[in-house]
Image (tube, rainbow, N blue to C red; front, side):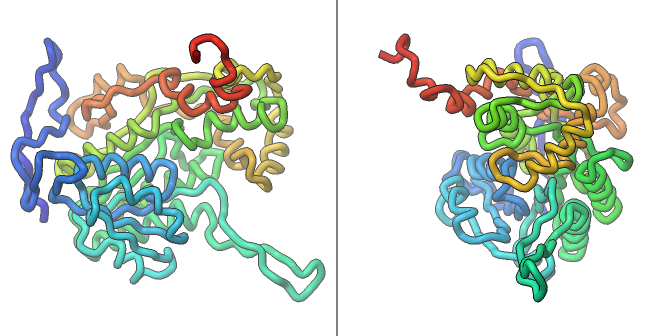
Length: 386
């Protein structure tokens, strides 16, 4: 079992006192060695499910920076986790192929890990074409439904953590998780979160809003629609609100939790950006940033759903009918920043600020990965590059 770490109760920065939840290691862990960083031994072993996903790669990078040992589960082939290898020092990773229907293979991923992180999530069912005996001699076989992934696998991982006596479990849910949301993804994220709480009550639940960052499926929707189809559709007047958070900030939050997981047992950490926006505002922002002079198209909700369903059959733009239902509602944290601060300490829902992380504005990072949509990128400009 991981021993409790001594922490400073209050850290002064100028005249401001940071929350006592800010992990600050004052005593070495057992087996910890080195000054810190990738080539050090942080003395903690972390099993990661969903490491090859969008958020998972950022989490791996943050864990690698701190010298953690990572047990990376992968359902695909070697190429899918190849870019994770340089994130850790040599000998700090262990890659394990598993199937969610093979419990023994999932146990092999966890092995003797101190912490298990579940990042697995799907916004669409997965499947494959199969040969049939009748015309047109081809059919479709569903491998995993959205419920299988967001509820079934989450439940299975929690049960294994109890069975294998894993010290800590970090489960990534969503701020939009709700039992009555029109989106199946949001509903199943809710039921998956509740299942984890019931099976493993001391799990740490992380609930981010929509994620933006390199390779995201959020801002790229607006840029790809403008570039490929010449128009950016939004639902109705695009007035639904969202408060996106930078994926790196969420990854840093998860990494901070692994610094002292005992301190966060049974706690919920909400992750959200500094500002909220309408989808209309985000569409205008992306068009301005990419210098694409395309029109924003306001579609009635049924028409947008039909378009999203059709887009679900292609790979150029990440959108489907269930994602459209998700975007039709506000995607916001449970409370305002002021309400989070006014909570009583007992049972308080934490935020990134409680862990010493300042949310990064979307305006600061978006250009870094969206400027490629400009004509000739940013190299087409004459001034400033000669």
